[in-house]
Length: 549
Image (cartoon, rainbow, N blue to C red; front, side, top):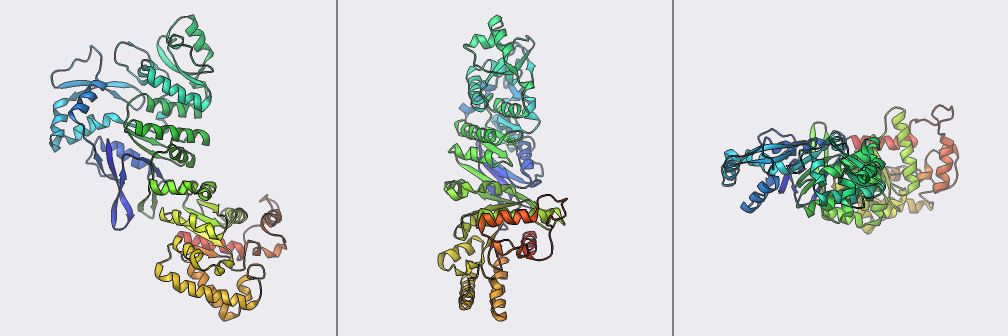
């Protein structure tokens, strides 16, 4: 139904809009207040008023229905109710509301046909009364409303709400039951025994037959009395059930979901992403979600369907939209290193810092937390990730930079030993201009020779302090140039060169545990180490200033 969505603020200054394919799963990510929820609201509003001045949405290309599809549309949504009798050229259709009600909508078929014949004056009518009828947008409040009891009614007439629609649609109800059972080990049923309302309940066992769920006899009443009313269950169960019930109870082909992961534990968010991503292509639907959950994204990816991720940002009054295409995302997720580092979580942070090892990551993260707590000089909304070594940092750094995420790398001083492809990979991933790679390589080789001339271990014996003054100046020049591109070299050697005044020996995890013990864990203790000038505190502050530029 949707062929292409065009978002304002493309991937570069020369690209004014970003086209997004409608036949792929589309997921908007980004920091808070970046416009993720807004873009969903604007897509919905487009079908009601195309002439609005949208902040993020530029345009939508839509597939127009064939005469056969239009007739099928009229038949599928037609009201079966003696109260609604149309004149020739008109038809009453069933229109779903945001709270799960189904109301009559009087359609002028001539206006739709005129629009399809090229009459632009009726194009808005077509959008609203054809395409808009297939649109479903769910946010935090609507998903809960959809699990509330709803009125019963004449089952021989058109349903007046989605629970009535599900009660008479065995296929959809059984599909929802299967999904809920997979998620919670409980079975979705609709309880009609109050006579006035229909209620969602979850049973320990599925009904043995249709009558046990839908009849009013003793067996059915006993079955429903033993089931749990959804109102008495957790918000997570309500949220998951509300989304699944709404999406699978109709024939929505434009599905917009804001924060689908709200109230869901990570495994449930992943299951929901999987189910929704599987459904969309089966229904030829466009699924667009705005999320903070890497688990929801992973669920969508696990479906095997094509998933595009768009990262929105809004900073200093400037919006941007960066696309991570499905092909690139698939490559990322095939890389065991990237899967194991939780790289998807970086999509939801302003800054990412990549270190060589897990010990480095834990130490710098703690330093940053203390800088934020005592003076707010650290990096807010920052995620620390670790590669396996300096040779693999580029495999994380490059993709994140390409997505527009401010990403820095912290490396030991012996990176100056790394020439050839290792050096080039690191610099290219940091977007160092190609014209500078060879000059920097020459400078690196000179610095490497300076260290070799000392006959000392540059990592263990003092780093830059081993050099003569003119050599030290050349080394610092190399460090400063690399730092301007987000590659930060530990000047005195390696992780264990920090906080030497504590006299902690050892290496790697053993050193980390000892230094953490020295630093203390209770901010109220007198021996708790707070930030001071220089040392590792100044090093992380330097990265924070780079990130803020």
